[in-house]
Image 1 (cartoon, helix red, strand yellow):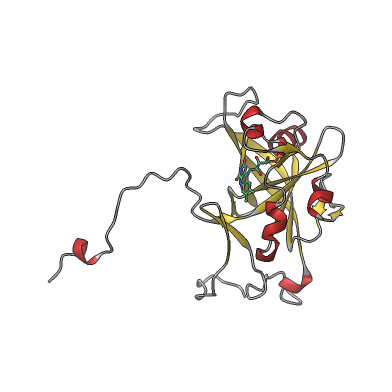
Image 2 (tube, rainbow, N blue to C red):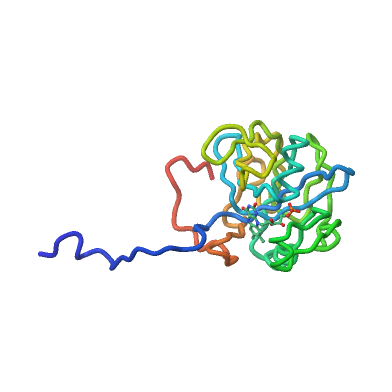
Length: 215
Ligand SMILES: Cc1cc2nc3c(=O)[nH]c(=O)nc-3n(C[C@H](O)[C@H](O)[C@H](O)COP(=O)(O)O)c2cc1C
């Protein structure tokens, strides 16, 4: 009889340049110092209870804005919107584009709503607008900003990224992805967009549900 090790698939040690194993594409809306809105595409986000934790590079305008104002909206893109997300991929709301970003072709875009054709919709609990076309929009406040490795994050260039802990204050959903008469999301209709090792990927088929599933 084969030993367990030999019956497993062949395995290798690899050294991938990034560890983006697959998380949803999120568009963070924040307010710039002059009051205009900014959109930051990102994917390092996870949720537990009423918290959503975001990993944002310190060089991004979205990070600066979220920390300064204590507010953001976490807009979840759907699979069909990947090209609109990608149309913002080389943009930054920062007037002075960091040298390493400029070298990669990034440019300053002061109006990302217009650039990508998104529609700003007034939020109810926070100042940054929501993105009307995104099927899920989470209004949130920043409750803590952690440095990698622990401790408080400082915007002095010491930390490459911030771990921003937000509390969701209000959830908006397109009615079409909800189950009428409930607060449940219809997972047959909600088609999130995932970022998997720098590819945009749509969710596969529904394989089943956990015992706690409500719908
Ligand atoms: C699909 C996608 C996922 C991204 N994920 C992240 C991320 O998780 N964290 C991050 O800091 N930047 C991420 N980026 C890069 C930011 O979008 C980029 O730094 C951008 O310039 C931020 O815009 P801002 O400077 O206006 O905030 C991602 C970009 C794309 C296109």
